[in-house]
Length: 519
Image (cartoon, rainbow, N blue to C red; front, side, top):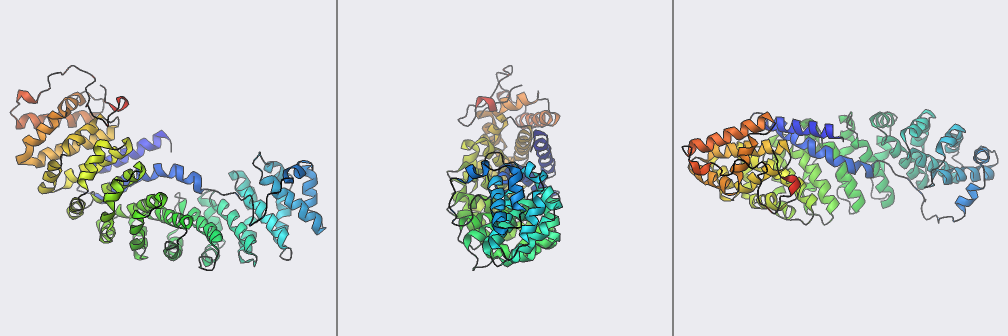
């Protein structure tokens, strides 16, 4: 995702935030977009395509590369087309070794030499298991490459032949066919929909069985992930409905790789509109996902937070299903986890809960999570601190008087003010809006809030923000100062002494020079 896309999503999230109290579903949806999109970048690089170098227990042939190097490409292709089965097998094996090489395999030259029709004929040789295996293995590794190679394979009628191999009695051939199809699917929604239209779903799901070896089942689950990951357009709802029962089985598997891919597939599926979120809820899988928040494997914790966090972005009723499964009981450990990514994802999750109704906000308070969020607001990393802003602002903007009083009692105001030093206009707006709402709701505690803002240096920063180039920021800053001075009868003690310092900032262990606001 480039900077322009990130800024667009930031603006969307902020726009929705300003509508809080009128369209809570939109608030949570837009909050979700920025986080999910940014997370996909690294995730997709890992799960997109796979290349297989060895099959089964085959030992690496130290002389293989030398043997291939000593034979011309023209001769390799000629041998692969030979009617003598032994010569042909040697030729196709040489092709497979070429495309499996780490050193710039000459796939373009192979395609130009007409290798695809030869390999397609080999796929049809049901009586020759080894030849089929070498051919499908070569195709799987060709599909691992760039899109133009995949397109050339599709034009050569590879997909119907690969789908036919899913019924092959030889499991190694079948698994390689899945690898090839998974790589083709990974090339985009058009390729995915084409493979679906030719009938991959039914044979794919038939392999979700306890009798299938774990290594094979890993490949099957990875193909399911690739089916789910494309968002433009997303997976058809009818296909999602077909896949969900298999995911309900796989989520109970004890293999870490299978479990991670299963939960990732669910995170893609739940990154959708409320109707599709409801399909996931109706499948009955949520009670099995929530306990994964406390799984010892960090990757499973992260994936489950994404999947269930997406559900919480739905309607209040859908979010309540998650809370009814005891989700919040896992968060003391998540908010104090040594992994900062877990901290950030956990706070993001809670920002969506606090975007719900007042009962759901109260559930976060009753779970004693606010002190932990305040701690992360002070001591967390930059990304986590930004997420804490949404949690506190949501509680301040839509909370009852007693809920806002609780924030004040938990000393949330001062660290909340310190987030104004982060160089993020959207977060500055969120914090200013939250402070304004705290002041509006505080009533008898207004003086306590005003003192907290002043004592942490917030008053000076808010004064400086009146000079900010962002119109909304300087208007919010002006309004807050107006609130403060009106409450105090324009008491001179609330006016900062040093108004001329253009580099005012908070003294805080969590602030760094590059995160100070400068006017």
